[in-house]
Every structure is written in structure tokens, then in C-alpha cells.
Length: 175
Image (cartoon, rainbow, N blue to C red; front, side, top):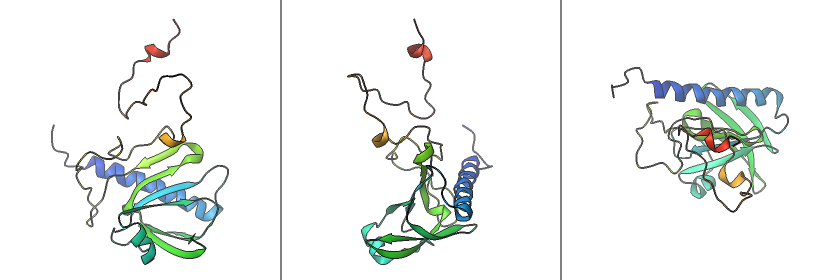
């Protein structure tokens, strides 16, 4: 395969981080509407992440926050956002650069993104060992997370197709 001198993966990743930025800007202005709520996962050790020490000790690598009922002071900037959340009834302000994000999901509408890691220079890190999920690039999720799926009705367990996998439609056609 030819070398990508344009950097399409980095361009796509940047554009999808922009989706998160714009979604947060909308709730900054109008609040959450309907079933929308956000699950945001980020690298706690990423440069520019500002969280209280007790959270960094509890989550030394990665942390997920949920913006749904109780969050305050959301401020969205070009490269990061700030939000105040309550942890054991203690308010804490978090500052999270968009480059630190690893996942973003809005389970209320079954939408999600997973991002590749970005280094301090803003470059995408190469994929190392197999990722814990089948998604290795920023890819829209079209199905809810496995824990949110209802159990199979028949005795058979069918695993969902991996993103980008070709699936035959013959199994769904009436015979």
C-alpha cells in the first residue's frame, strides 16, 4: 500500500473530534434535550487534562464522565472543554482537551465515536497491540454497547459483525 502523505486518518480524526466539540457547544447553549446524554472517555494523563488529584489516583489511565443530570459550568473552547461534576457530593471542575478523548457516545440516540490516541504534537499514534474493542479508528457506532443490548431471544448467540465486515443479506431474505 502506498504511503499516505496527506494524512487522511488524522484529518478524519480531527473532523470527528469537531463533532464532539459542536455537540458540546449545543448543550452549552441550550442544555440537554430529549433522551440525549453524553458518555465521554478520556486519557487522564494527557497533557492539558486538569482533574483533582483524588480522581487521577482513582483513574490513573482513563476515565469516563457522563453529562446527563448533574453537571454545571460547561464551557467549550476550540481545543478543550471545562465542566463541573459532583464526585461523592464534592464539586470538581475538569478541563479536558479534545485530543485526550478516546470515546464519545450519546446512548439516547445510539451514536458513538472511538478515537485513536494523539501524541503531544497532535499526531496520531500508530496502533500498537490489538485494541480492546474492534474499532481502531474514529468510527460511528451504529449499535448500542454490548451491555445495553437485550439478550438474544432464541437459544443462539450471534455476535455482531465487526465494522467494515461484509455481511450476506441472504440470511434475512424470506424463502
